[in-house]
Image (cartoon, rainbow, N blue to C red):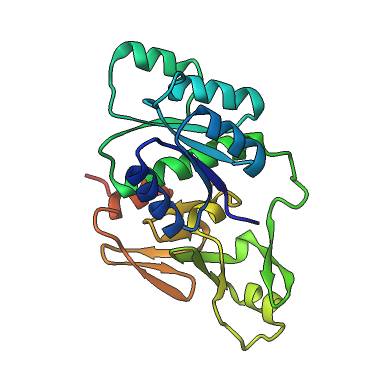
Length: 253
């Protein structure tokens, strides 16, 4: 599984490189930066991006909306518009292209990453073919080969930039290492957003860096989540939201 390839169409060079830096930090592959329609079309053909970030206002005869329409005629990919223009007519024109979202300037880095991850997840999870026979399995690169990981054996995943650490059940570790005594978390070179696209709805995004398997929760309190043999700190403001994801029985008033 390679990182998703992202095309940036932005005529302000500084803004484009800041976008690139944010995306690279999260493990995405920025396959090119275009400043106008012509450059964008060339990069679409040569680099085959999975998603395009397009500024609505571009120099030249064709703006970002016209550029997006041209790109989409060549390849169906999710488009996120970057804009500081909130005029109704511009918004109506942009809606014709069915964008994944609008990101209004100035944006926060977390907003950018969340919108990109959501766009990729919504587009590729709905367009993926049915692999129901092997849907509960992942094959992860490991020691010059690919080892099978059952999704149900993943207790939680912790990410740092473009690396993710998988914490597994005893059966999961035994399948990887072939040794019942070896419980070393598995480190893979994929970011959390990319991995989450291959997992089921039973996995919950606890924070920007942690994804947990709800099936392995043994206990929840205000400070700690008990997941199998592991304990994960409860992020601020997540206690009530996490309880909403599981079946709870409330005390009688």
